[in-house]
Image (cartoon, rainbow, N blue to C red; front, side, top):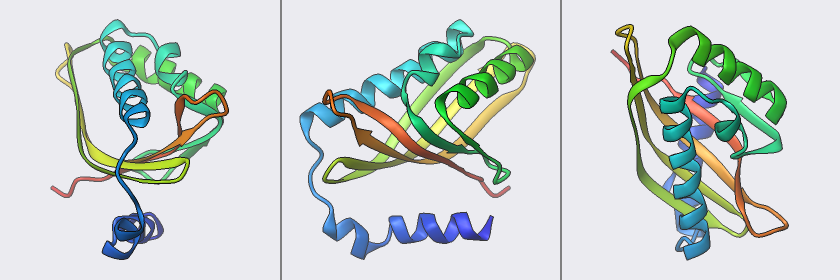
Amino acid sequence: MMKRLVVAALLLSPACLAQGGAIEAGARKGIAAGNQAWIDGMKQGMAAPIAATYTEDAVDCGSTGDCIRGRGAIEQHLKEQIESLGRARAVSVRSVGSVQQGDFVYEWGRAEASFANGKKIVDRYLTVWQRQADGSWRIFRNMVIPIAD
């Protein structure tokens, strides 16, 4: 847990941000589409459209510090989560900031989903998007940052 917080702090440090640049229009569009895929997938109860936003070798780390490696494993985890929670009734993603460094965009924000059974997901996130050979943008690394109570 501490290791993830140190990595997040370093990625969001002024020195790191100062080295980044403005986000390209294509990157903004791709990231917005990826975030919308999470919203739509959670509302429709479908893991595949969400998993499609990840690279084949992606790593997705949850708030407990457990990490899942690879798009297939991430999709399976999402399926299990959706089976457990059901379709989301309300979903939102709010990007708070981002910085681009070459073929990578570091984005951070907040995601929420509410379910019919009363459960709710409220997460802060740090996502590293990577430009693919075809020019599209996919999630290379994703980390949920626990919200202190």
